[in-house]
Length: 370
Image (cartoon, rainbow, N blue to C red; front, side, top):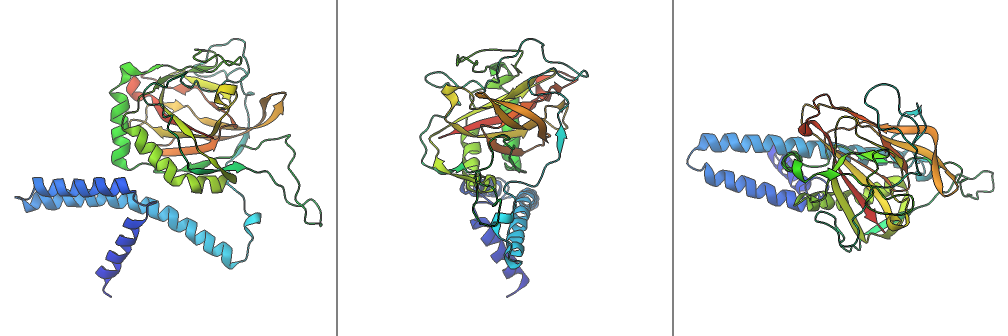
């Protein structure tokens, strides 16, 4: 077999792997190549230049995804060879540095930079879902995808080999972070879509502690949201469904039925924030099980802050309270974060000197319901 035959066989294998290129991406790529060929058929030099540009973009995307999968496969084989039991491996992503919280969740903000408005705080409230019939962009479709439900078993405390339930005193924050989540073209189209609809973004709302929907509380949350995602809703949800089994496995979550989804785009500009809360804290959103946050923005980035903090917590009555330690996830272009909706989390204040809408910190947020 020649070198070209080996390379062609390897390329064909990658093309068939849904984790490398989805069916929709393959169709888009075929259409793009065909259109380029039709438009430049009379000029071989232009056709060659166009094909080279497409090849470079596709190669970069495929290489990033393939390297990540190859790395996971290598680690699995090493683990199998040295005979390490899966039970001894940590579930979830690599350890994230945990820092003592400079202020407790829901408490006063640090003294520097733009500060959220001060005032008395109620218990954390989750993002507001649409009442009744959802507006465009909020998916209420019925799903049958198997998901998994969290189990918390500790290692045996003695030599009798019996595992016992962990103490519920502390709930450790767990998450899965995936880089280069969308294809470059998909991400750029999403950016253009958001920037072109500034006038359709509205003030963010929350569900009040009493369960009242549609509450605007600038002491708890400040940002703007877009409910109509147009074609980008299906793009992001298709990709989420594709990686979901791997995410659930890393989080150690057992299966349950995914019944519906919610999605929205959030724009956070200078001084915007979201105090510590859980996404399933009220009865009307109790069926939420998994949260995902996809980061995107115009480049070069014109904002700082807006970090996602996932807090370790413990129960105080019916509400979670931070223990003082947390994971910090700094927004990275084309990155997505998954975590259970019961996780106590917050968004730190955003600093955007220009205050221009186009320079905002953008996220595509979603919730998966049982």
